[in-house]
Picture 1 (tube, rainbow, N blue to C red):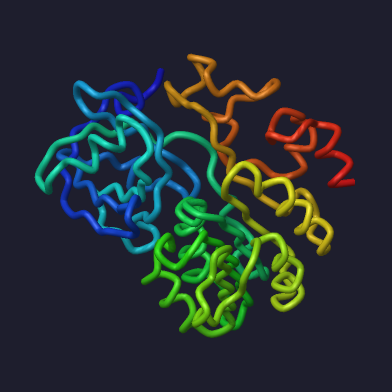
Picture 2 (cartoon, rainbow, N blue to C red):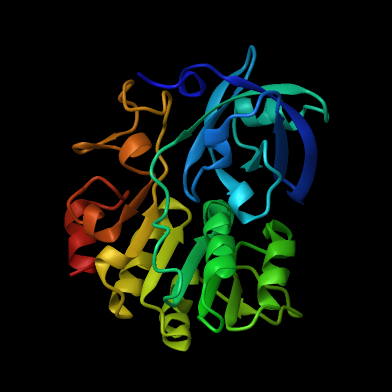
Length: 290
């Protein structure tokens, strides 16, 4: 039998709102009643966020109690895209929302002492942020960690404070890449995929995590594989239209798997057996990633 907090939205109040960019904000939600499973959630898992009279939508955690968030809070970074997010952006601190979860399978929590690269595009940095924080907190001193983050232009960058904090840590290499870089930009330029192999080489990475726009996932995963990381050690966050969170409604059915329960984090080895995982045709994907 499913726990009540999976079936019924648990009330939470908007405690704080942080502006990330023109269309992206981080919401710190304080649960009215403690839900211990939410405090124990893993990086990569998600919740269903509901607004009475508007609807419900899935969002991954951007911070967790395990990575520094206050116990009893749910921290979500949200881009304004549809009816639910527009209504959420209109709320003031103190407003009440509903939260169900946690749902899904997150990132593996072992092998924190192995070098790893995290590759993110746009809002894809949000599902990776908690995983990065957790490894940085638990790794052995000196374990190399690389973060490759791509955005359209300087104004669309998110989690800037986290990027700056990571950059100051030993054995951490941050590569920020802009597609539309101004003349005074000192970071990388162009597409994220062009910078994957150099970062893997620089860190000696044996593991990788990836999240970003659909069109970026296949070529970035191909770049990680060609750089020498095994398919079972590359973990990809998939986005699908999830409605129930526990594999009943069928909205997120992917070949023979459910993204909401079997994911949203999958190894690349698993995705090799799911031809509909990427927007590109299956034959194109398998030719690109031999």
